[in-house]
Length: 118
Image (cartoon, rainbow, N blue to C red; front, side, top):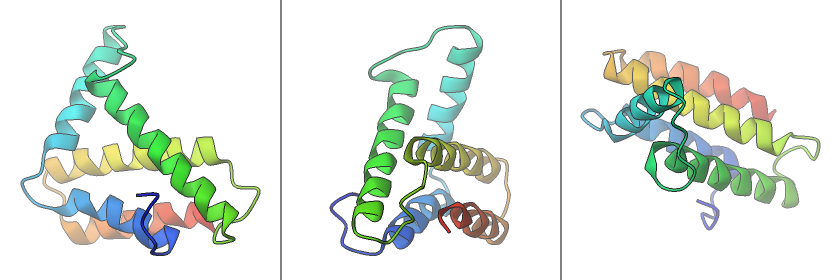
């Protein structure tokens, strides 16, 4: 994602919109498995379900830092907290999509979540 030349908000929006693809439950599976492992106290550091979430969070953080450095995002943005929040939002979107919520409602939530960048 960091190598994408489109505006940062567009890259993030499109990343979140991938949740809307019907039939793609891989992220939901990762989220569900990570939740179960965390509830059992079995936190995996590299690879495994939580490793994938941590990798995605790191990639989003790098994208946010790029946005700050090129002047697209405000310099006082808390990169770590924002990256974590956006990954958490995506996990929630995956769960809602899996539960049958329609794309229109999810798009509204995505647009609202991205307002954190303003």
